[in-house]
Image 1 (cartoon, one colour):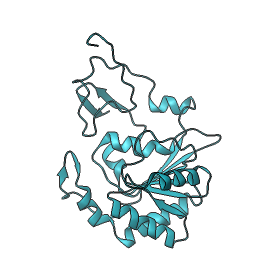
Image 2 (tube, one colour):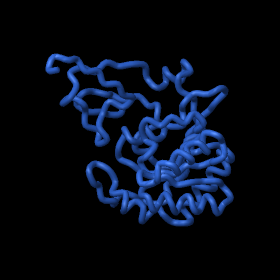
Image 3 (tube, helix red, strand yellow):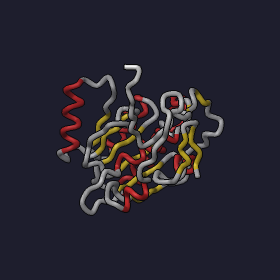
Image 4 (cartoon, helix red, strand yellow):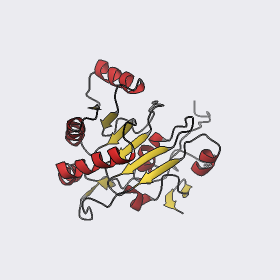
Length: 224
């Protein structure tokens, strides 16, 4: 239908690399901002924790507009670094349901192994996880039988898990869009809910807080 009108809906009107949507959209119409949605109860308020950066990533290779996650994993997939993330979870969000975002599948699996060793009921899931196991994991998480779900890019978009209280970021990213999608995954509203975001890799220093104001345009985005 060459004369059809198409409406695209998104909370992050830019591609992962920050490029705009001008090639496929003619007009950008703004809805309420994240701070407005928080004030009106459509998003939960949050507390943001960003411990000191565990490693220097300045010389990590950039691949397709983001950090090379294999290089990132080599630097971050260390027992003492994951141990810090576990320590922060226990201090800040003990017992709360959390989603962890890791750099690679191996990084995620190793992170889960350390959480389990610390007595925290955690599970890794990815795109290759059999459907039955993934459905069981989601069901256990929704029912509160599972405290922590770890993944790489599986839970960045379209996740319907109302019980998520906490997000733990152990994947650094140069993508503002990816950062917002992951950091705000815990901000689905709930009664008397305050979301917790534990940023173990300093994404907030690259992009600002998840509800920071940005200049979204069809040609790209810049932080205001």
